[in-house]
Length: 132
Length: 132
DNA sequence: GCTTGACATGGAGTAAACTCCAAGGAGTAG
DNA sequence: CTACTCCTTGGAGTTTACTCCATGTCAAGC
Image 1 (cartoon, rainbow over the protein chains, first blue to last red):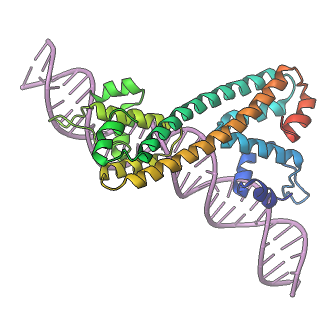
Image 2 (image 1 turned 90 degrees about the horizontal axis):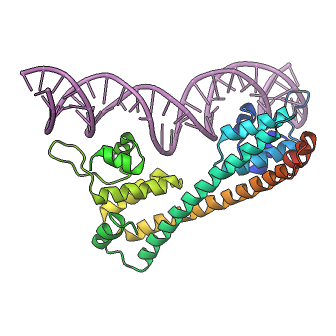
Image 3 (image 1 turned 135 degrees about the horizontal axis):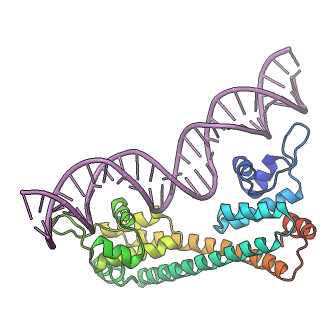
């Protein structure tokens, strides 16, 4: 597959795909004799994985390190696992933060829906002080 | 409360607190006769709210607009509610992305835990192609 | 009265993650 | 052969959200 096709397939720009490869977020992509990228299934799978991780906010640095360990191979399983566990924890923490935020948004929206929002009332009671 | 105390209380630097006020992420904080900020409960509540929203990744732009509408008052309830609903949707989308990512991390970690990770095996089977 | 320390402002600098661009090569259509 | 399009690289530019800094003010302590 050409870079344009992969770009289309995953909704990432060609620039982003080249950028990901350049910084080591994905392993080097195979090239044809003219030096043009020819993405195979493995490359695509890496891209899809990284798209998923990035969409979830996992830091590029951590992912680069994972790929580096992976490419190094021999005896890096423990380190890789530790890295994944660390990222999982961070992810769970962020999700908990988001849940708290979501709860508050829901409360506020509910107040608006109940029509309890004359401006002056809202001003002092729910946002400024008690945070409904 | 002084800026130092509020900084301490919420774990945000004084620079960040001043920055938030400057860009309108929170309404202007009351000052004493020397022009020094004297945070009251309402200011603190705004800060706490914004800390929560920011921790969840809600964009500053949207929050600034919310505060602007809020300060404008009269007849902006619908717009404010729409804004909150929009942010709630984005938050839910991001949480779903994170859940997908979390599921994949859990799968991978489980494989490492089962000791199914001889390098060559892992290389082709789970990461490169099928993405376990 | 002078020093010290916290706070003020405006503006420059930083980090992360892209995003864009200039210059050039390779394959195809006419 | 020429034009065209898509690809290449290296490097500069952009956006978001802070973070740091120079310079200055003011109240309190010695």
